[in-house]
Image (cartoon, rainbow, N blue to C red; front, side, top):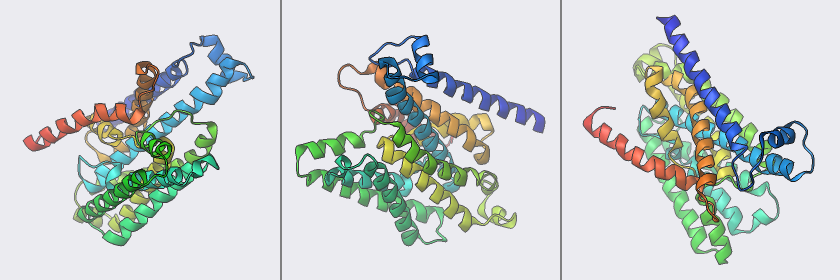
Length: 335
């Protein structure tokens, strides 16, 4: 039985990894300029200053890498939070990290700091996410229950969203207000390898913190009393996982803007394939989230005519009906 379970898990990981790889390669060919297989391969293996090499290495490659990293972060964070709170409707924004990162990035646009340095936006976003989580623990306390974390997160998220709206309202120019609004819609356009180098380490740290709690989350699904009797420190687990979510999601949102519903959709699709075990869901959600965001970004480029559709708009169009479907299932008691 155990051997069969391992074989199913290996097959699932292999299938998702191949899907991510296929989508990654496909993304290299999607865009206004049509490139041949030889041109893309030459640009990746022996980059030069030719137009095709510039398109691949400076536009499509960093965009695709960030789509993979951001999607992986959101998928993993959603699975982690659902396991921690034991709530099938939980998603990364519920602890306020996404709204905090959005507020930090919005303030950069508001004060015009984005024109000074390319690093201002991601750094401000990560700082905003960490401040939001610090406030979360101040409000809920270190020994917070899942309900206290949810309520505190909702309060912080609402406050940060209100401040972001205030920044748009008080923006000194229509251009600044438009920049903030477009950024909040989520996009990976005009990102570079500098953004990858800045955000990837922070996301990696967050991944390690979240994945380290896989076994504890599986035990926690048996109940808090059982988990405590088996040696799981609930307070330490909550702090570690929430901090990991904050660091990774803060880095992701600071680069891509708000991309909703990925952390909600992916765990629900993949949960039946891992036997509804929270710990085993983490790794596959990481790969599933990566595949979903790369696919959505490909769709953005295929659907856009002139003005590019924002990535966050596409994921919301997919995610909102899915969320309603989950609510109906929850009402019928089938979740």
